[in-house]
Image 1: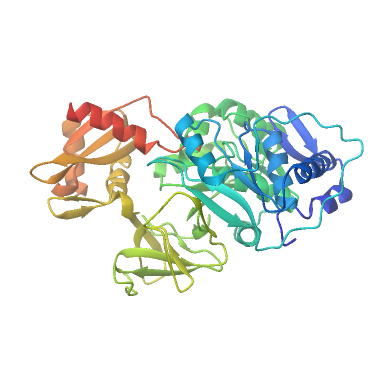
Image 2 (image 1 turned 60 degrees about the vertical axis):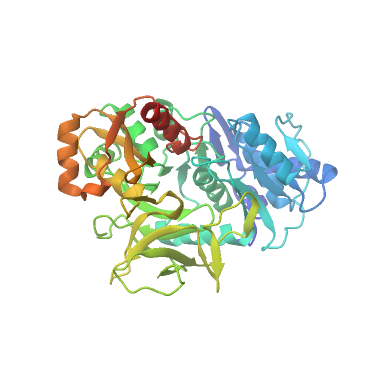
Length: 467
């Protein structure tokens, strides 16, 4: 495997020039076409910017964004992948903080009869990508990644999931979300066919899977649920692997997934934009209920208390990670819960390890609430709520309360009878962790990556319960 992102594309194109490399809706680019487009765009960037320069990619989801991203990577520039859906204040703040040398909002068509050669590859430790957190809890932070950190992540994907040149990989969401960008870039870098969409639509995604014989899918639990609902009894047997990143999901969802994708193994992984893979739950591994799996290859895990002392199995504390897949630094924004020490990194997630090395998540440090003197992780309560019949999604927040300090409230998508819901919660949660008020909401706000927009949901809860 090459040591920098995209450096091997010319060799892949020379070996099989007409093989499909990138599919986007009805557009199909062969290896030869894609490599030529990337080389030409890299030459144009070299004329307008210095090596190492930050290049803002404020482009819609499509082949042009893929071209530009790889052009930055092979040419030694840093691709700042903007989300076109950002509100104007987000965009202005990030522009001011990062001062991109060039901002690309549209790209011209290219005459590719005489493509430029690929430039010499940059250093493996050079930064090539600045992505941004989803903004679900505030202004996005920009995290900077090196070529080496993603190349090492690709090695984990190949070793743990068997992903390789033979695969056709679907990443149906926006590439401003690192999950889908990673899926497309890894596929193309390794010689697989990458399939993407200008805009996610479940029925169109199912047609793409059938038409192109998709073998692997990167998806969030929400996207997978939408594919299942759109399936309507269809069976798609070419899919052999579904890679899920996000919250744990219910057993009935797993059964419905296997009905739609009867030959698929389901692999879940826990990680973050700053860390890449932390733990993996393999399709054929007996993972205990509630666990997100064991440490990924090359990852060392520690659970530590507030004083930085390692805790024994069974005790909860901050999750610390050591690997070669960690991010460089924040290009913009601030995260006080993100800390480094002795080669280890924590991003503020809390959890515990069992004796066999399985990790159980408790929640994020920055979301932790204190009510009636008890520490409560909203994620724990949300997990219980979505396990109950009729509840598709849940978000739990703390609102000011003069008696308890914080009153727990829950916003829910689904159907429920409140007395029955409270009774079910009492059987599964201590009294202090049961939300005191529930709000049903069918129009569920989401980030561009398909996750629940926690900031918007909290605003809805505050407006409803504090007026």
